[in-house]
Length: 117
Image (tube, rainbow, N blue to C red):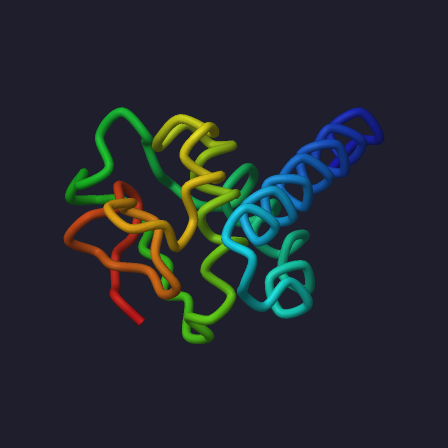
């Protein structure tokens, strides 16, 4: 990885951390520490390593990601939004009634989520 690519990933991780904070603040509840602790990991996976396509989230040959610590869902949501699976404005609906973004990921309602946890 060259310096420019590393810098871009660092910027993306900062955007994901901001998305986490916006969502948890809007929800007035959640686990910001657990979510913030995986921002860099999700950035690397979703923006460098994984074979995924936000325009075709159910593509048969895609890589799958399972967030085993579902309480860190705000981090996954922020990464998915930043990657283009859904509009970033949805992050402020975290845990609101009627929102697709609830306390734990739900594969039936959120594009890019492969397993409910």
